[in-house]
Length: 360
DNA sequence: GGCATTTGACCAGC
DNA sequence: GCTGGTCAAATGCC
Image (cartoon, rainbow, N blue to C red; front, top):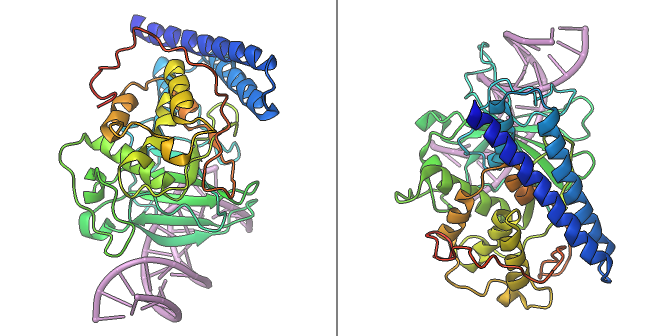
């Protein structure tokens, strides 16, 4: 009980601190000839922090529910170990917020589905292709016109459903507002061999996936999902649990994620966003707009397990919301346009850079 | 031929 | 009765 309150308390404090930090940053920006976009971004972040803080204060939800809410964004990863039962955060179909909910299974037609679901938003710069490359092999089994929706909803299930009994499914719904955005709802965990993969499967041909035994399954899946989602210059955001679609502008490099080298570093913003000093570090050292693309990620040692290490540090809703609440800023340039403020860095001198998993 | 996709039908929940 | 989710036959592709 006490720990429950402690968790809420810490989350609340974190949100308020974050809001304060961003407000301070905005204040600095107001003295500089920064773009309106940058200021909008900062304002959005401030509002987001305070909304979340208020939500915590107002919420009648149990601590576990709040924690579940906090973890919602980690569930950007379809394979995140999330299990939320009957959270009041989930509205019905009319409410539109269905990030997680218990899936009933008492129908012959509607087969048994695992007890968690997850929803992510994926936008594709091309606007033409669906976000079907998420690292798993899916087989489309249906398509339905949804009432009130401009575009039909597609239903996919794991290719290995029959061979390996994998009951993971996903639904893909193109957004009415922005056809380049797809709402993807994942249901069920992959119990097939894909679920154990740490290595992104090749985009080509046989689609066979080789297992990787050394990486924790969830993080492996997480990494894989991230990689796959961004492989085609996708930007991803989760639906805000509390207030719709506010997103922070962010664009990813139009480079292939097929090899887990420097390109993978573009995942880092997700992990760093909420760690202000890390965020600043990233923004300054890795994302300088004047820096050629090849120099975006100057540290060749900044690799995937480093990301995992950072990913491990993410626990609160703000962590993840900051990380994945992104928006597409599509450009035709091969060099991504990062709508971040590039402020001077204030690196915590006590930060343990030698922490295992950080600069590995 | 094998596999994936399409699409109309079926079923259960509301 | 309407709607969403799933099934399964038909079809297409490699």
